[in-house]
Image 1: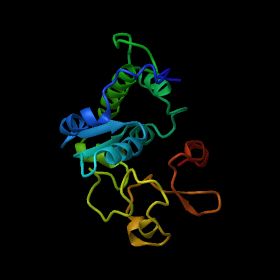
Image 2 (image 1 turned 60 degrees about the vertical axis):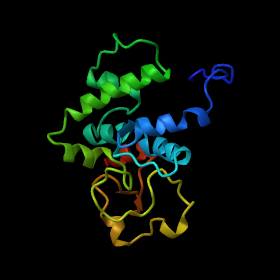
Image 3 (image 1 turned 135 degrees about the vertical axis):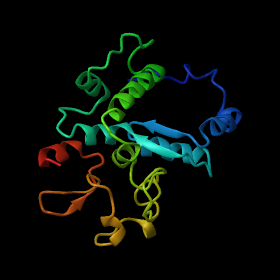
Length: 190
């Protein structure tokens, strides 16, 4: 899809040489990405102790803003929002182009919210930096099952404090996490 090969990055500097500059550039900044908890987790593994001001997830924000959208891929959302990409240099599925398109999408989605707190409530994944204060159950970006002692358990009070839309009920009435289950969520009208 992206066309990046080992030859493409053969002349790129190693992480050991640029890691501290990346940390300095990101320190105290808000980061935004599609499925942002994944990017945040990768950055945490490469930058131990690093803490951004917050994490905005454009997919989560798009689902909250347009719950009945026919699709949530970048192309579908760009078309739905009527965003003109003709001035964006490069081509689709290249980092700079996709990041620019995602930034324009983020600006459009953010414009649909009356306040920063409303935007944050819709866009920050649970347990990620920037989430309104509450007890954390599993750090954002940590893969499920890696820390079983802090994993979500049905019935715990902190599980019920998640923002609306974080949890939904499946066909049998059990609570499930909708991440990665977009088709089921739309079918259930969540």
